[in-house]
Length: 570
Image (cartoon, rainbow, N blue to C red; front, side):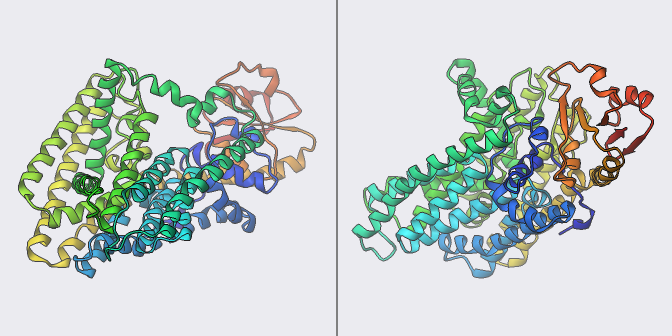
């Protein structure tokens, strides 16, 4: 709840508006002119935002209430994470499991996404919830619990299509249970009724999965009908084949290797090395579980570990495919290469598993040396990819690489930033590893609790850096939306027009505040705009305060209001 009353609106454009737009459409508002400035955003989160928008007519209060909901979901995730850890590691003391659950959930990227209405906060919760339902299903295999597993994984997909990896993992996992005929902890074989529980999931999957496409087409037609197909394809399956075509060649395999290193380096830095330990532990559990399937030696905790590995691995592959080409010498986006947004939501469980692995594994120092070697390998490859880039990837959108953006400054040289961020990550890696090793030998829970300190400090840092820094100007955009009603009342019959010139779509705040208002839009980035179109006496014009059109409009119009990021002329 840090700084809740200092937040007035969106921090990420056009993403957040894209999630509120379907909710507004459900209430009868037409924001399609504004959504034409962005791409397609899935409607799952909109189902959560819809009742908030319905009950709160003040949009600022609605936005803050959505943040409160995010916070509550994050808090609820702590006892669910504890339940998961109890199932996986029953021999670990309860107090230690509780601390690890809290530490893993207070992941800085999760805390950051809680402060806004991007889908990532909800995805973090849903991923934990899916694993929680898998654990409950393994405790007692019933059709109802099987359906709950699927519904949560399907809803993740509806929230964002990149979560298709979790659905694939669910289907593979149920296949393992069905054909592996694993024993339960009690040692009895699965009954026919329990096998029906495995079979019901893919049947429900096919029916409801098909239904998501029908509803998606409805949303696109109603809200995104004015968006060009080339823009829609960026967040849609129609762009996947183009991305896959970049893989199947020698150059493509080298590209994949470099981008794997970039994403793995992000995991190491964002989790202070605990992600590596979690990967090692999860891979070991998954390997042994698959190897023993025929021998019927697996208990349910092993099967739960297998599902977690499958879900994390599939989501990692989805991120690789979706962001293929991020290592190309012509890509100027650092955050596409060292990307976190598409993988942050599964890192809390990897962190928790990593702490458990580090505190209980055999051959500790051998594994530590190997992990350190891989960390330096990933760092070296990442460094040379950035160094060999034409621009050194100077356009870094830090809010999509939160776990490596603590020392990132807008517009600064990427190479010095990389040195500083790498040094910070190595320092945190050593600090956290020493803490867990001290806990391993001293068995005092206080040592584990110390991991909370960097989590809280880094969470505050990233929220100040990417949420609160711009909220004063966002408040100005809110005022613009509130003043618009008076201007239109004094100028009846005039067209309300926004000419988009480039950059962040701050007009979205105005539409969010004045929900029922129709704002006509001209996208100046894709069409040439005649000055006669916006310089006339029948227009109320809103443009970027620093754009070239603002200069022309100030010479033509008598009245001007400049506040936040925008200027209004009439």
